Amino acid sequence: MKKIKQDTSWDQQAYWYDKIVGEEGSYYHKEVIVPTLLEEIGNIKNKKILDMGCGQGFFCRILKSKGANVVGIDLSKNLIDLAKKYSSDIEYYVANAEDLSLLKNEDFDLIVSILSLGNIKNLQKVFSEVHRLLKPEGKFYFVIMHPCFRIPRQSHWEYDESKKIQYRRVDLYMSEMQIPIITHPGKVQNEQLLRDQDYTVMFHRPLSKIFEFLNKNHLYVSNLKELCSNKQSVGKRAKAENRARKEIPLFIMVEVVKCN
Image 1 (cartoon, rainbow, N blue to C red):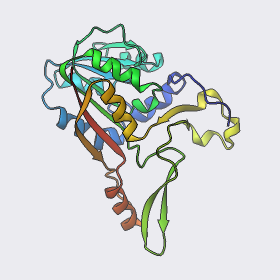
Image 2: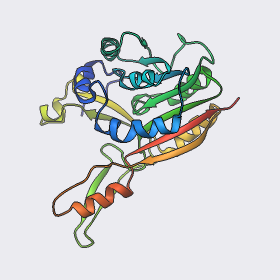
Image 3: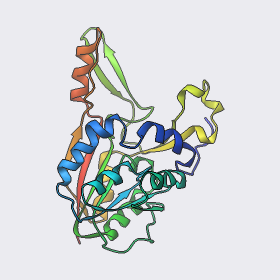
Image 4: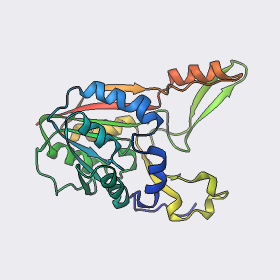
C-alpha cells in the first residue's frame, strides 16, 4: 500500500458520495441515525445549529425544515457546492473543523456531526473549537461508527459453525490508527494500483481516547446511545445474523454538554 495521503478532504469522492446519500440521506441515515438524533435533540425551532462535516447538506435541510437556523461546514468544496445546489437558503462554508475562526465565539445552541469525526485527524483541535463556538451549556451531538466493534481492516464478521452463531472478531482496538478506505472497491483488483481519488482516510481511536479529548476541552458526556442495524437477513444463517445485528452496535451517538 502506498503512503496514506494527508489531505482528508472528500473533494475527489463528492459525486460518488452524493449518489449514495442523495437528497434525503442514505438508508442508515434515514432509518437509524436521523430518527435517534431528532428524538434526542428535541425541539429545535429558532435554535442556531452548526452541522460540522455536513457533506452535501442532507441533515442541514432536515434541521431547517424543523425551524432551526442552520450553518453547514465541510472541508470539501465539491460537497459544499452540491449542498448549495440542493438548498441555496442555508449558510454553507468550506472550512476545516480543526479551525473555524470564521465563526463567532458562543454563537451556537447546538453543534451536530454525523459520521464525520472519523475522517478528521486532530480531534483535540475540533473539540476546542466546539467548546469555543457553543453557548454556555450548549450541546454537541455526534454519531460515529462504533469504535469498539467497527474498525476498518481490524474487525470482521465471522461464523462459528459448531455454535451456529455469528460474532464480531476484533484484531486491534486500543491502538490509534490511520486507515485508508477504498471508496470504489469494484474498480480496483490490486490495492497497490490505488490512485489518490480511490480512497479516503479513516482515523480510529478507542472510546476512552475520544472521551479524554472531550474532557480536556470541558465537554462532558451527558448521554450515550448505541445504535444497531435494523436490517433483516434471509437464508440459512438468518437467525444468527439477525441476532448478531441486535447485539453488536453499528453506531454510537454521544450527547455532550459544554461546561466552563
